[in-house]
Length: 296
Image 1 (cartoon, one colour):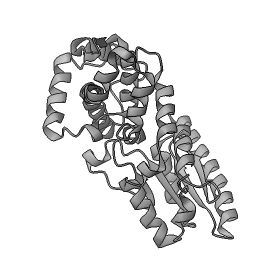
Image 2 (cartoon, rainbow, N blue to C red):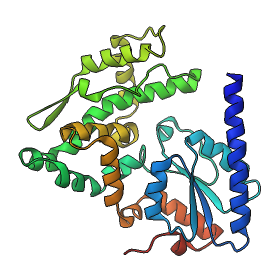
Image 3 (cartoon, one colour):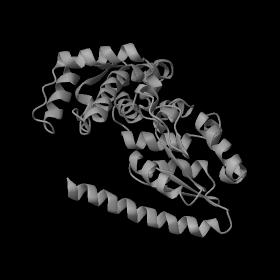
């Protein structure tokens, strides 16, 4: 464990050094802003949003790294900010950090699904049999399933905050094992889902004592706290479920790519995230018109 922690620290130090060089260079004419994001897909997303002549977007592979590195850089520079997924922060009332902006909803995928980009996916990829039904019902259908999964991800997050360990393992789960498509309607087979999740989780944590009854109780507990699907559901789960609705003709990653391509700057302008970045920019630089991509 000590070696692992030292590795992370060394990697962060290398990144901080890299970003200091970048910031010292652009500080000379105050013409650019450094934007730190979580991953490579976020870079692809924000290339559409910010003018690359006046911004540099860098990934850090993890939300905690953004916070740590950003706080270090802010001791010497002000032309840097971070953007990351909200995740469960609003539900848990976690404090925010200076110059760190969060998505309105759980993550960027939810932002895109809540835009007209979702309809574009349905129009482009659904078959004739299901197309009309999907335009009306698919979004509610996928949210109803992702919400159950989301409650257990939320429980997992709570456990991690309390014990520094996730007890449930979601990576590697095959959603098609417990989500079935019949007559253009998706159904979550709850018992199968709980069984698959527990068996899969025990590959990482063999001493896991959680039962199906425990899982149901945890979901019920969290339902009493919140039913906000836009905060609880994970966007990657939703896009995986959409893939099942489309009979796997297009996979999750390609669905997310399609969402990014069809997502317009005008949609982003309606978000609280945009408004907060614009406010920050007006206070610090007053050149948002240079940061944003002009409408084509």
